[in-house]
Length: 172
Image 1 (cartoon, rainbow, N blue to C red):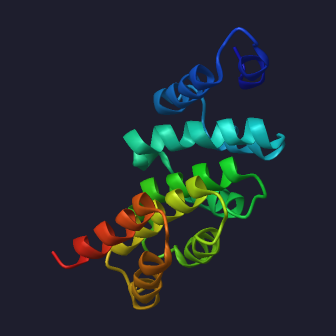
Image 2: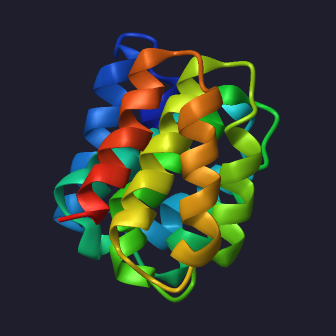
């Protein structure tokens, strides 16, 4: 079965499609670069499913991500679709430690997304920024005060907690 056939199959639920694609990625029966090429040509709902599959796979095996993955999810952080923004942010949170010197552009996009009206976009951006902060890189010079400020102005306690936990982890 191809990605296209899987995604068009109305008998398979959306969550199951995501799990199947992520399994293909982890088993290497679907090269991640091939999935990205496919996703780039798709409408937002399908693109979101592809990025969610990458997120699921990188949560378990971050090492499957290469620069191509980082570049793709960095670019998709600027999408109009909230789901694409939040799935991309979660991928960055999963793989940031592999690219600790290449996070300037993702950080810029993530900080923009912290102002998004959608709580899930803000939550995912907070998660990624928190993971980046914990890496203790040169980015922290600017990121630390930004996260400190975000933690004070964020109204949702669940998102605020992510920032505070990242700040607390730095002190260890």
